Length: 220
Image (cartoon, rainbow, N blue to C red; front, side, top):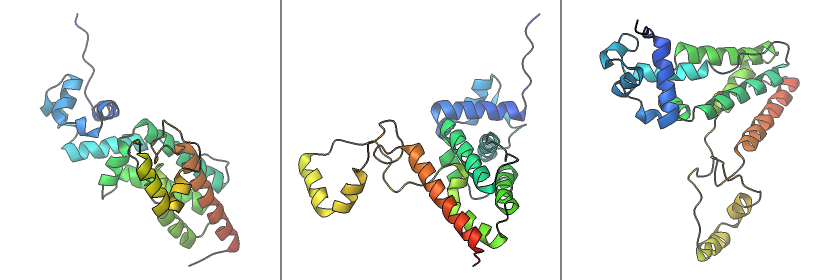
């Protein structure tokens, strides 16, 4: 008796699409290519996702659902830090998701639920709605584990000595900063900065400031 084919459903479609994007990038995901990966005709996919946009929304949802849920028993600062670092781990596992999220102007209910539960950590910790409102603006994309970096993220190239000398003369402060620390050759942030350290440094700096404002009873 031939093996029974696994039933196609929305979860299976999204899982295959995420796996394809992980392997080849989001641009490689098409309804035709996804159908081939699943061993079905393209029309079979439309029973589960209406179009490419809905497919991308579903893929983003699948990634967001991998982020750790809020942990009970932690103070608000530790809980927020843990959740955002979980989001970062997930985004590093799915590098295409950052660009996909940035391309979307309307969040899905699952994305909104993630945002709502994260806001709930701040409010549950006693922060005012007013302070939390401004905190969320300041957090921006960091809530999802990524940030737009100040420095160019393209791979470093060999700079001729005369150009390096010119740069040092014309822009001495920039040169001093970008050459101040040992670099991680596997980094994707700037010309080799330590991604994880820079992200955690910024997050801790931010949370320290929020904590001070909260203790002062700050309001706008």
